[in-house]
Amino acid sequence: MSSPSEVVTGALLKGWGLPDPGDSKKSRGQVIVVGGSRRSPGAVLLAGESALRVGAGRLGLVVPGSIDAHLGVMIPEAAVFALPEAVGEELDPAVREELATADAVLFGPGFDDAEQTHASLRQITAGDIGCLVLDAFALGILPDFPRSRLPRVLILNPNEEEAAILLGRDLGGDRVAEVSEIARRFDAVVNCYGTIATPAGRAWVVRAGGPGLGTSGSGDVLAGAITGFAARGVDPVRAAVWGSWTHAQAGDRLTKREGIGFLARDLATELTSTLADAIR
Image (cartoon, rainbow, N blue to C red; front, top):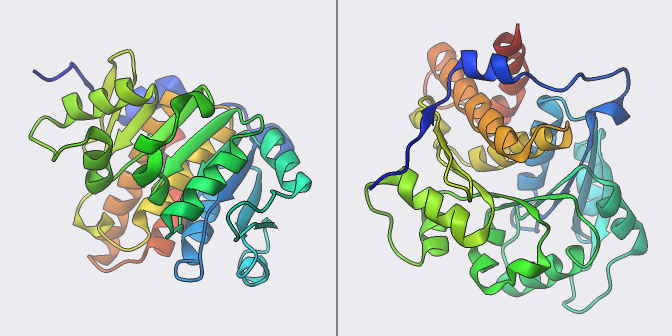
């Protein structure tokens, strides 16, 4: 039997509101995105840009040393740090400091090796992280990673395939019940394709977004948006709801205006005006 859920509307989000942005980038929060690989360097770019597009003030990227110089040129708004590529190599103390001072950390976009992902997650969670968002390849290793080593504030952003891995079975027809089960199992806020659930049993459903969102990099944009809202000081549950709704609405706006075939980078850009319209 499905858990009760609430439909997300613009009126609900206006009632929730967003934190005052203040008068400087420091007042809007710092995001760190950890991920990337030679095969998928663009994932961290999309996620990082999306965090800024929803109002986060500062961005840092922690990526393998083989691609850090390239990404620094491609996104001049970000500070870029090197992540050890050899399993067992120590994390730079400067990176540890950045992670400890970040308001929200996103881990996973662009990783493509299970062993390295597991080692990197062990390294970054050895320090003090306030809010951690896990996405993409990181979700595939999560069932084998001790929950006790992860921060108390944890947000998961699985797609359907990753949700099945977290459940340990194929998805059925009751999305709210399944996402709620994942939330309880991993003691985390979970967003899966517009269904958001908490370990305590509360759930929300975003009834927006269409086939246009089914494009390469769309999930990275979504993860970045959720992380950006969390960094701004939005409660983790509401950050997941805000991120999912804004991502879906941006997709609907692009589909109506452009048709199917827009890119994830277009979706990231559309986040800002979508959010501005939502809070007017």
